[in-house]
Length: 290
Image (tube, rainbow, N blue to C red; front, side, top):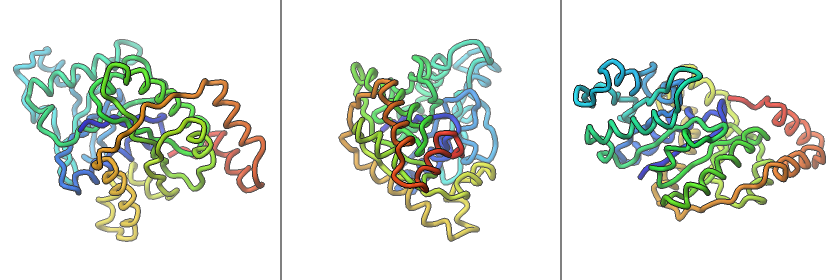
C-alpha cells in the first residue's frame, strides 16, 4: 500500500506522518517513509538528524545509479521505520516533481520500492503544482492533514482538486482528513458538509506534539520517559488501523475558491458564541500554527 500525505506547510504534516509510520510499524507492517520536500526534514523525528538526500547521493556519484547501494539512501529510523529523503533542486531552479521521479526510479533500481508493506510519501502541499502532485501518481490513498483554520482548509481544498484530477487516470482515492492539534472543529465540520469526505481523526491540541518535532522524537519514543503521553499515541494507532482496513475511499470534488472563502468567512463573521468567535478569529489570523 502506498499513501501520500499532504497538507499546508507548518501544519504539522511531517510530525503526523512520522507518528503514523511508527503506528503502522507497531501493527507489524514494514514501512518506508519518503520525504518529498526540498527542506529534507520529513524524517527528522524518526532519525534525529537530517539524513543525506537522494539528490545529494546521485550528485556525489555523478548520477551513476549502478554505484549506489541501498544503505547509501535508506536510513533506519526509530521503531524500525526505514527513511528516505528525496531532497530538491536548488532554490529557484528545477522541479520537485523530477526529484520525486528520480527517487522512485532509484528505489526501483535497488529493488527496494516493492519490498515494503507500506510506503508513505510525506509531501509539500501548500499549492499542488504538477511537480509536487507527482507522488499521487504512485499512491493508493491520499491523507490530508489540516487544522481548524482557514488557510489549512484552503490548502486542503486545493489538494482535493489534485486528487480528483489524478484519479481520472490512476487508482487513487482520498482516505480522508486528519485534524492536527485542534481543540474545536467547527470550520472542519463546515468544510466537510460542503465537500463531503471522511474525517479519519482529530488530534488533541497539546504542546507535546509540537515539542516532539523540536526534540527530534516521535510521540511513541517520548512515551518511554513520559508515560502520560500514551493516550496521544492511541490516536495515531487508530489512524493506522483505519488505513490498514483498506477503506473504499472517495474521489472528492473541491469547492470553488470564492465559494469556499464565503463559506468559511461566513462562519467567522456570524459566530455562535463569543468564545467560538475568538477561536475562529485566531484560526483565521493564523495563530494555530505547529
